[in-house]
View (cartoon, rainbow, N blue to C red):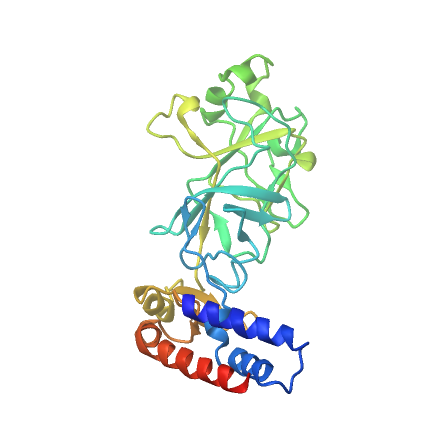
Length: 313
């Protein structure tokens, strides 16, 4: 690649020196080379990591990488992985690929360490995510006449109701945390949704529920009686497809050290190989071809074009 880079610099300097006269041989050679060998000088390489987080299908480092259904919702920017919905953007703390679960945190979520106001959390209706069964939401400091703690539950206008559990010990444990205990809130102002059911809108509108804040967690860490040790955040389950089968084409791509991606224009599958070349299968042939090209063909092209340049000068 060093020889290729050096050669291109020479051709470009010669082209500029001729004031971009497209009839001059050096300019013609540069144009021909750019046309014949675009994959060697420009390519989009899908990254396998975003910061400390490993990226695997269906997630990708940018447009054209991963699965197009997931790309708008999980993005990598400045080496930080972010999950986005209509309610905001949330840092991704980890991904469990074996169990197909993504874990996120909400900076506006209350924990045992602090209480903060929040507008709530919701999923986009068309997003390929659902709440994992282990996720538990607790609404904090709700008004006594709040619809979220009424006996009949919260009716969102679509004849479906969010069932709220006040009999669980989770509320009393949460209200024992120092930031909450200092406010002296009655336990009756807390209610828990487990398993999470936000109705057909997938939305937890705290203003509508008359609750200024909420908390969420997905693991007791074998410390059910100590809320300071719980894992706070939101666990989301994702699916590859309706049948949830891992794509065979992607499996073959990854086994050949490629990264699964898609054609941005048509959303069709591509395999992005380590050298940046995209294929519709895997990287085995490309890797072999690329190694042979580097070891032999590149020297031949370099020698022939150098001879042509000096001949026409």
